Amino acid sequence: MALKRTREMGSQQAPDSAAMVAGRLASHPLFRGWSGADLMRVAAMSRIVRPRRGSTLFLEGAACDALYLLTEGRVQLYRITADGREVALHEVGKGAVVACAALFLGRSFPANGRVVTPDAELVLVSGNTFLDLLAQRPDLSRCMIASLAMRLSELADRLEQQSTQPARQRLVSWLLDQPSMRGADGSRTVRIEGTKRDLAASLGMTPETFSRMLAQLAANGAITTRGRTITIVNQKRLAAEE
Image (tube, rainbow, N blue to C red; front, side):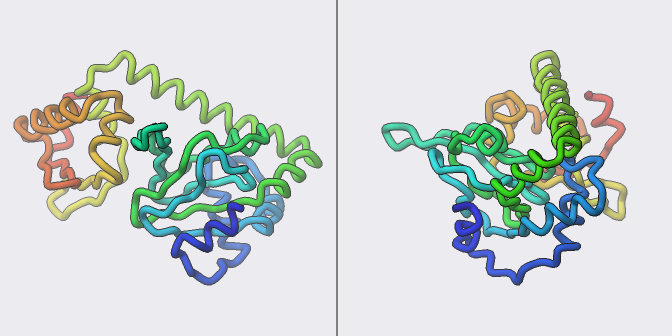
């Protein structure tokens, strides 16, 4: 059970207020256009969870009984092969709906889900109650379809970008799009969440290519790197690489 499983993740926080939950829902792309009253209805069937890094959200083959809305951090989807090897499929970040097709299609989870960052936060919406609400309110169903369609369009644009842009440009675009901490000298610091291997895969390149592109950008004076931290020291020079 999804809501039961979250109590086993090591996130022993007190329940958040309905208003706080509604605020998280309002900021999530899936609930674009929903009224405050409708968000409060969904908040009443939801809770915020803040699982530890490494916590398992769900297992492949388990029944999906909740909608997982990622509001902070990153979640990795992976499978275990017959010979026991772990195969990473992809990672999702803030604003994602994790494995929502399983809920809407009444199917089990197609893969395992695991938190890979220390600052993760999700809103879990009780699945059957939410589906009942959509059945009762066709207007909300249309809003949900529109939001999902927009997400699909954004994904299609990203895939097209990956298929047409050289690896170097894909990396530069990713760096420029990331949230960052601004330094007093005007630099911007981006932290890689998860592993470099998984990030490279999400950008459609090998880990070796990813490391080589970083080294080239550093040699050109656009960035510096230290562990999983990338500092953009010259944004104009970096943007010129795009």
